[in-house]
Image (tube, rainbow, N blue to C red; front, side, top):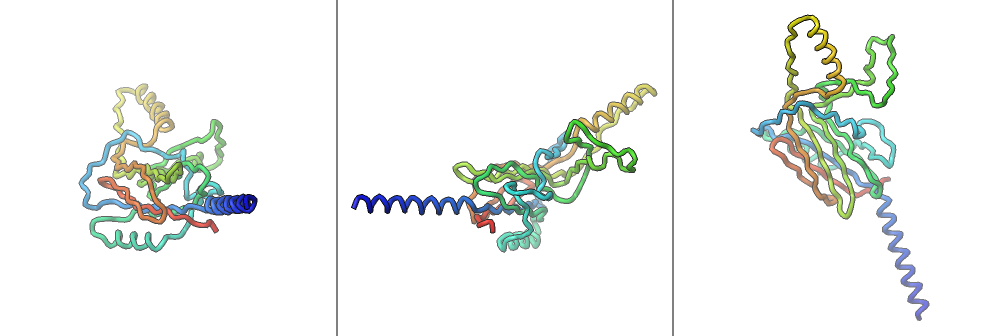
Length: 242
């Protein structure tokens, strides 16, 4: 009797472990829909520089698993939400992105953005850069784009699932004030300083609306993130990954 009970308990533990392993081997599909409030009277904040978000991998690029992998599908729930926002007189959908990621690996934030490039800046990711001096566009491959709507999203798992959002909407890119040189030497000096500033600083100043929030999320449920100007609808679903 004792031996039978032991075998039964052992089989139960193996079955539970197998079920848990299968559940962990699946994926999380993340859907993020960004919109803005058309009737918002919230004033943007003036920032001297806008962020490049270059430290985060771009979802628009081809990523290899276990990194988050971009998808091109929209669930029925998100299709309905997009259409409702589009037909609304008070909201406007700006961006929809979706990706899948494994359930057990740590995933850093991924960059999400629209297609409206408002500025470009030379950015050399390594200490050494190779430039083709015969090209008409020397250094064009090192131009980093700055988008009107730009930022990062991260689904992270500890005890619970959390979605972190860090978004900027650049309402207006302001010109930098230019000092007036008094003589030729000052003019040459300012030109050298301007060249150094281009490489050292991001574009700006700019008028920016921000949404930076972290919230616990539940799978299969629509989650709402809100700010005076930007809003986000997010939905995380558990999939088999097949």
